[in-house]
Image (cartoon, rainbow, N blue to C red; front, side, top):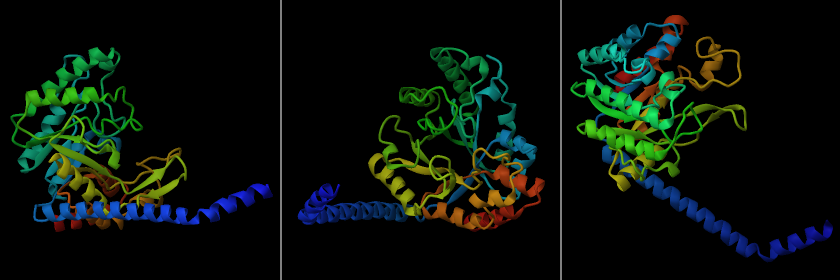
Length: 359
């Protein structure tokens, strides 16, 4: 062992000049790449600084029901009390076609009507995979079939959905297959890019008058949206504080500065000419796995470890500081639950103040 150590030290010191040079080159390359990324991010921020900021939210009626709340009341409060006018709505397949060839769009109808009456705007999620667990919302009768068969059923349902709402002025854009390529999360049967491409052009064949959003599979640079389908807009999710179930088994704060997302958006614009939006800005907690409580009954001190009333202003400002102008908050149904069911209105009230600043 002593002999091997002697050989190692001899080789190390004999080559310390080369090693130092390699380290210096590596550091230099990293500094250069960081500077380029920052420069692109700064360019993007300046390019869009005079454009209006639109802060909206995703609204999922089933999530309000999960908390025991009336979704119509929750949406009304979002509109009237928080003053939110921009909404990403979901069109869950299993809700609107629970039985084959029997369609019921009444749930979406009242959401469209309420937002339209308020002078708002809607981005409609379409496809099999849409926001909230289990991500893919196919009805049992369809998903029991072979892939080729349920794909045809999905296309028929998608067409019915688009044709029902495409003449409504309140509808401003579609979002196709939420985070389709994110295979590590969600209960989904298929992540074939060819299907996503086919669905993209199918939607365009029905309504090519509105932008179509496709979201990144995650926020990493390798998911750069340069491959098909080349969507009109690119969505990104921004989660700041999550529970790491893999290694540390504790809360983890992503150390990414706002300009990282400016860089992604700027790089997307420079290389593809496409706009970017934040389709989910985390404004609700991320609870640990394996605990005996959930979002409805978790202790306040546990909920506030990943999103507290004190974090509201900071989190919304973080989204605004990216320079991305369209920002959809994530989890307002939970804010309402905290306010009305748990006598903890601080997040709702703090957000109301912050939203007024950017309106």
